[in-house]
Length: 372
Ligand SMILES: NC(=O)c1ccc[n+]([C@@H]2O[C@H](COP(=O)([O-])OP(=O)(O)OC[C@H]3O[C@@H](n4cnc5c(N)ncnc54)[C@H](O)[C@@H]3O)[C@@H](O)[C@H]2O)c1
Ligand SMILES: O=C(O)[C@H](O)[C@H](O)COP(=O)(O)O
Image 1 (tube, rainbow, N blue to C red):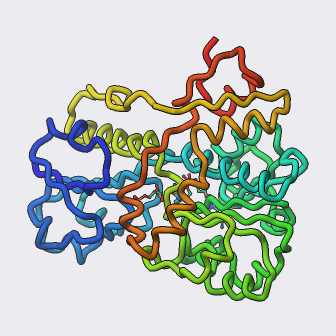
Image 2 (image 1 turned 180 degrees about the horizontal axis):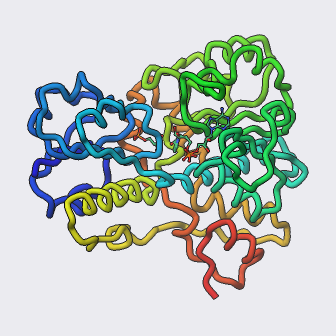
Image 3 (image 1 turned 135 degrees about the horizontal axis):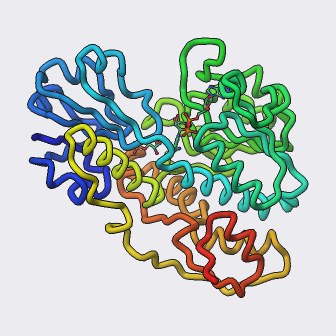
């Protein structure tokens, strides 16, 4: 079996070497000629999987994307060809939720407000929106959920309208990109909707760049209006609207989901799906490959819950590291380079904390590994 895999899929060799011959490729450069003999294709979001890529191939049986999003895959075409397809739902949802939490802590420091007095509007209550809401619950922060599709499907949670979300202090976007239908998300935040937001609000986009009209956002910010902006994702990646960067509080290179655990979970999910397809027993698990985390644990403790949690969050992940890299290096290195060479980042669960430390229950509920 010939398995072609994106070179940016971690632990691909460890998981797939028993299946056959492994051939790595650069995600944006893959050609139809190159993969004409592939039996299995493992991609990330930057490879467009469609007829144009696959028309020379007659042997393909399985396509997997080690990502949550699958807007880069023409599923109808794969179905017609009888090729099995899977994505990795939820693989990096914790990572995205921790990115948002870290960004919120930065904004707490910068704007000096009490997070517990704020309400966060979560648009899209699927895997990432839900993980975020769980962390907000753990910390006692108010939030509203907006997801008309889940609401219609009978999800038992309480939902709010987009209009209600627009009144929240902080808005965090967690929807897939969709081009049509009643709930399409392409340019969901267009000039009209953006102009309804005040300069007291914070808007966070860590889902897909095209959910916000970036040009409209730039014009609004240029006129010194609009909310504080945190952008991990951009329209037209990798060619981002660099003019927008100085108007944002935090900017990163589509890495919200790039914790080591998040990326590696994606690989593990594809391994499980392929094993099932070829009737191979599941013999490998992610934990075998993940290194022990080397996280320097700060010694600031406080009876103040917000202060304590902020320190522990920054011990594991301070999004300012990635914002700095992005601002300083985007002109020198490419967007894709910054993503491919992303420094190791772990999830809260990688930090072992003693129960003796302040606010152990809050930290445990937030996902830290609190040992009795
Ligand atoms: N920045 C990153 O690194 C990163 C990481 C993971 C996922 N993502 C992106 O985030 C998206 C969401 O991820 P997920 O795992 O939560 O996906 P998901 O499919 O589990 O959840 C998405 C939710 O959005 C809802 N939705 C769709 N249209 C909506 C609308 N108009 N208004 C409100 N809700 C709507 C859906 O009903 C669904 O419940 C992914 O599709 C992917 O594009 C980005
Ligand atoms: O959809 C996803 O899972 C995320 O956007 C993910 O972080 C994409 O990563 P990429 O495939 O672009 O490396």
